[in-house]
Image 1 (cartoon, rainbow, N blue to C red):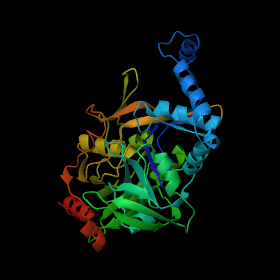
Image 2: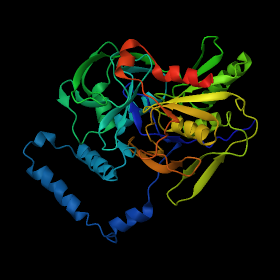
Image 3: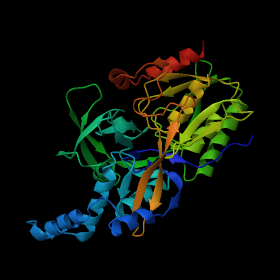
Length: 405
């Protein structure tokens, strides 16, 4: 079966273990020459002399001359301009930040606490999800927790996810203290976490249930070192599941921050037979492209329950939305993160990068996937703090009960 591979990535989440995802594959360097020409020729309505006046005044008047750094002033100016769009996923990274981002995106082994960070609807820094087996999860960090302080220092309103990550990251064996406000709580706590080496496997398979006749297919992310590697990994796991002969699957997308849009479409096509819209993309001109299922997926006869939570974002929402709206699966858990945009990474002349939102991701019914329109489970059920303390997975237990009906 031939599947679609248009190669998009989309997300606005950066892991504190330094794994970052969220761009359209293919690196570009481009400028809008017409717009620049208008500014330089004075045809723009914007008075840039005001900018240069402030530049000169800061250099001549600021009390501490040691803090005057032309390069930092330039980068700060650009960041301010980009941040004015109030899109948490659209960011400017200077060369050092770009280097860190690239290093974090190129492998499976990371050093840190193992948690993905993002923003809530008020642009406050939250934990999207702690990674399975990570120091963050072992310390009791949960999806939806707010990070208030780092080593006793309050997070500033001007700091981005990237700024916060830079403060939290560190070498394995070192410690960091985080002021955490757990979701639903009113009093914050301070948690000390020892950073470690973290290996992130994109997916795993085990068999559960009293008779081990249910496959628990856990997909942790929709990226590997390359799109082709992820697809190869997916196909190998799919083939092993088919050979097992099981007919019931729990697809666990909890804590999955996303990755390649195309990977989600590829995966969905294994569950949905031909004739269904799996997802859609809308560009800045309003043009919509539909991604349809093809004939002969390997899981079209598999009974499926999907687990999601507030840490399920981006491509994992595309997959769960496709299965839910096509009628192929029952969704169980918490409402998802609500991340339905894709970013392109534009390489700039000095080694810095601009991550800019270029696409909206739409669900099969045409609804834009966002904070106000996340994936709402068919059966909403949460894992409580008490469950965590006891090592009980209420959501998984519910999924096992549901799939045996």
